[in-house]
Length: 207
Image (cartoon, rainbow, N blue to C red):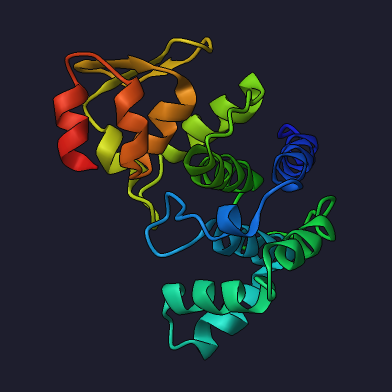
């Protein structure tokens, strides 16, 4: 039987709420690691994802002319509210939700970890994720090219975490904190500064 990932997801949602409760309007407007989105926008996207079901996703996808970015943009617009406090209140309503778009629940763990870092790193917030949250995310993304292209970035490289008992792949090595490895293979250059190894130049060129 597959592991139950929902307790991880719910715990990380609650931790993010605790980190964002004291945020100022300026912090909500801070540019996230997602190039087109502010911190408030990323949280709104996470709320929209938590509300999503496969039938709803396919209906919106078809209704948006099969443009995934349009589906995402509509979700952000629907959930961001007029202020960061509004966006946070909407996110809180989904803390224990178990609905999700098409795909495995491991993808939801990955989405959560990556987007939490999209928010936390620009705000200078440090957070320790559970080993299971990190390894589940890393294992999922390094095998998937869907939308994110992480498999392509990780191909031909050995990825070795320095803070968690995890490694994968073959080829020139890259070492560093697993959250930073995850950010790099999912296309976030902010993760590269924490990494080292013979494979770093190759990965940097792919990000």
